[in-house]
Amino acid sequence: MGGVDAIILDLGNVLYAWEAVAAVAGRVSLAAWEEFCAGADFTALNRRSDLGEDFDVIVADLAAAHPERPDWTDILRTYRACFRDSLTGPVPGMADLVDEFLATGLPLYCLTNYDGPTFDATRDLVPQLDRFSGIVVSGKEHLIKPDPAIFRLTLERFGLEPTRVLFIDDSQANTASAAAMGILTHTFTGAGALRAELVERGVLPARATRP
Image (cartoon, rainbow, N blue to C red; front, side, top):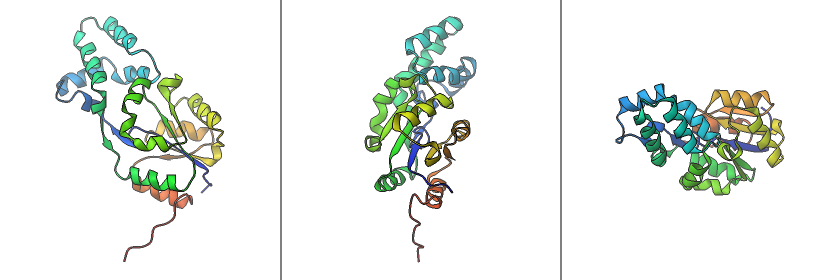
């Protein structure tokens, strides 16, 4: 495997678990949430937010598109107001793995699809981010993965050589886009598989066999 001079990590579902429904759980019925997601196209609404569009504009557009469903704008506002609850906890094993990588002295970066204000309001949940060499937030750049433009911006901003960078993301679409640009990639499924790859690439030392 190729050598690695730096790592770029995704945040959601790599460092910290994100489950959108958790923001409305106990506040909106599951049936109403599922109907909203399908009928209002929550994925598209969330993408607009991650691109940095003003939240009030997104809400106004939803109200105009579905004047018969004022409850959908209420659900979207509830999701936003309670967004912190959608972040359900650290991804198992990743905090220790990040500490081990940081101890190597190699630079570690974060590239995340995230609305700017909500990122600022919740970054305290991952205090290790303060030790990263740089962070790129889609909502602040008005670019979003898997658009190659946000990968180019990240590489250029931090002076990174794509063939010496390992990009880690739980989305195959995102890792495929990065790989097409010559970036080394790992599609995240868990800390164990990531550790195995980091050891194979010589980034982390092998562990001693337990007796």
